[in-house]
Length: 129
Image 1: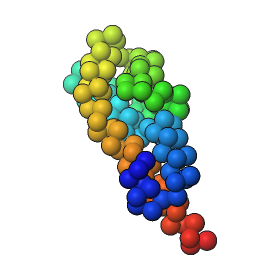
Image 2: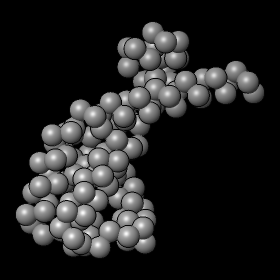
Image 3: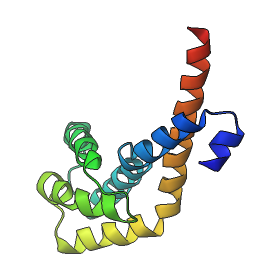
Image 4: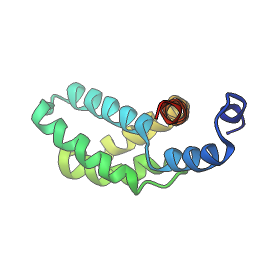
């Protein structure tokens, strides 16, 4: 939050957008979950076609709106989608949780960077109008 303000973003805008984008727009979490799920399904010889994953990504995007902004909250919210749409059993879900928590810092960096880019784009577009 402080870094975005130092880069010239309006403090009111930064105070609203960063917390909102950190909890609702979980792009980093979705990228991690999809990548790990695909790797596991590929290694296990399970179906992993674009038809299956397009629906999974859509449902995951809806699920991530409800994901709490706590470490590991996104993967816990996604377990239902993983089991119902991809057929993950308990062992595969446990592996997903372990992989997700291991890579948590990368998703956080993606989410924070995404929120900052949105604020900068909004700020630049606001001056163009």
